[in-house]
Every structure is written in structure tokens, then in C-alpha cells.
Length: 443
Image (cartoon, rainbow, N blue to C red; front, side):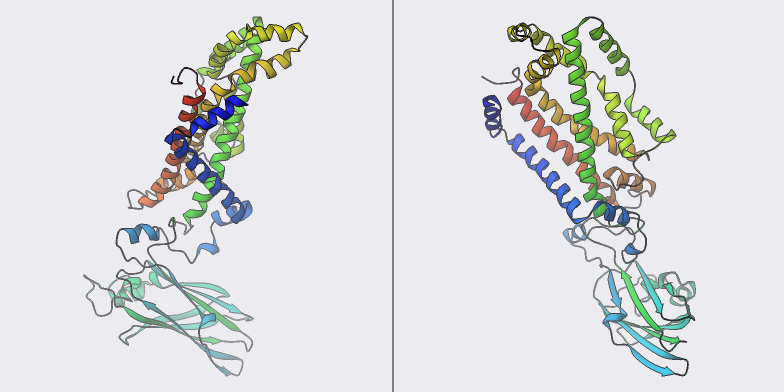
């Protein structure tokens, strides 16, 4: 106990230990915060996408990165009919409704898209809606009319007729004012989308949400499915740490016990363990995991089990065996045998604890190895299809040619977290090695 306490006090002398521990504590704190604020079921539901992301822009970068570079890219604005004054004129069998959706636009860049979401409530017949766009200069642009289902979306940005009239894509032409199509400039001011609807039921109601999508969103940006990447970056932290920790614990403990058992019993037991180890060393881990993921399942827990099984008879057995051989002949081991200690007690209580201080640094630096392994499998398309992880984000970015299209944030964010994880555990592990490894201790 005194040795451990002295070693921990000595760690304070190494800045790398303090820095590495700070990074590890940050990752642990982020993991706990993520699990508490975004429960597992909620995270899976969010990552599957769907209607909950429909108000997010597609492939939008982080807000902070744009502001840091001095940019003025717009954020998404959502205008809801529940927040505006609605005018209704009843008639026999229905009523006429006018919904003005107003918003201010003062950014220097055009929005990325415009969508209108409509919902008709308490109605058995489809409503008819006509749209008019009013610019700050007073110009009125007719957007056409159509029948509306119970839950419908009007994609103003993908209106070919409107694009032909404006001479440019609608989400640019509607904000360009009188500027020429070859050099459009944003007309800043207050815009209004006026909905004139006819409802064919006396109790029918119409709700409308206008989404003027920006080009930046949140802390981490969005992907091609409008998903907030912050969900995957946050939930990827506990998944990565859990995978790395469980794999490191499973392989280290089992390998150490098997090595100590072989050293103690010697003979055919030790020979069998060494031959199994030599065979297992030449087996390539990554191709085997690729084969398992391709032919059977890509479940992260199955992959974890395969990693632990293949890691039991690893090269570490020979290292541990070399450390344990002189311990077996130590006088206190002979004394333990003399007073009748069982084989299991000698292995677990007298042999293994002697080399634990030297193994702890190795164990700490082993964790990021398995974190990178899980991310590598996901990048290859063999990650868990359910869990949002750092590797899955990188895989999606690769499939969508994120770097080619200039979406650097999509790749940089998970890559930085992976590098930070490796750096934190490496710095802390190397400092532990300097403290607890007798061969590296300075006089």
C-alpha cells in the first residue's frame, strides 16, 4: 500500500501524467453526462433520424467554426403558425384561413433550403393552399397552390416552375431582390410567406411551419440525413471507453492468469499454453473480425467477445511468463508451499500481485488500442448498425465523400476525439511506466 501511495505522489512530478489524467477525466465526465442527459433508447431513436430532424439543415457545419473564421453564414429559422395571428373567414361547410409567416433575414449568405410543413386537423377532406412570398421591397411572388394532405411538406426550393420564373434556384431567387442572376446578392429585411387556405370542414384547423434552413448548425454540424452529429460524438465516447476498457480488462486478466498457471505447473501445462500462444500469435485479428462481421454479425458485443477470446493467448503470455519465472523460485513462495498454501492461492495471492505494478501502465496504454480497433471496424463498414459511434460517423463521411465536398468538420470532429483518447491514455500510461517500472526509475 505504501508503494502505491508513494508512486501516486510521484506522478505529480510528471506534467504528462497530469495532462493525460485530465484528458481521461474529461472523457469519463463526458460519458457520464451523455448517459444521463441522452438515455440509450433516446440516443438510438435520434440516430435513426426521421421526422425529428426535419428542421435541421443538410450537411451544415458547426456555428463556432464559421464564426471563428469571421463568417456570417445563416442559422436555421423556423416560423410557426402557432406563434402568429391567423385570420379566419367562415363560410357554409368550411372556412377560409390566412396565415402570415414573417421573419427577419440579415445574413450575408443565402439559406440552403426552404420547406413548408403543413398539418390539417379534424378534417376529412384535403385543404387547398395558395402561397405568396413578399420581399422587404414590397414585391409579391406567387408560389402557386395545391391540395394538402393530412401531413404534407411543400419543398419550395425544389419547385421547377418557380425556378424557371426566377432564373435561379428558389432559395436564392426569393432572397435576391433585383440583383442579377449571375451575381445575386441578399436583400436583407423582413420577409413574409402568406398562406391562403380553404378548409372544407367547419371544425378543421391548419398548422404551418416554415423552415428557412441555414448553412451552419449547433456545435458539431449535421450530416446528409439532417442528424445532429453531436449525438454521435457524445454517445461515441462511452461506447469507445466501454469497449476499450472491457477488452483491455478481459484480455489482460485472462492472459495473466493463464501465464501464471503455466509457470506454476510447468511441464505439459506450460508447453501446451506456449504452443497455443505461438499459433494464436500468427492469426491476424483484424481480418478475422472482418470475416465475423461479414459472415455473421456486426454487433459490437459480439466483436468484443471475439477480441477477448483471440486476445487470451496473445504475445503478452510470453512477457508475463518471463516476469513470473524468477518469482516462482522466490523464498516466500517456498514458504507458502511449506505451510500448505493451495496452488490457486499461490498463483492469485503471491505470484500475480508481484507484477501488477509493472502491468498497470501496459494495461492503460492498451485501452486506446481497442478503441481504435472498434473505430477501424466501423470505418470499414463493419460497425454496429444500431449504435452511434465515432467510427460510424467516419464511415458515413467516407460514403458521402465528405472531404471531397468540403465537409471537413464531418471527419475532423471524430478524428480529434480518437486522437485525444489515444493521447490521454498514452501520456498517463507512459508516466505510470516511469514510476512503477524499476528499469526506468531514476536514482
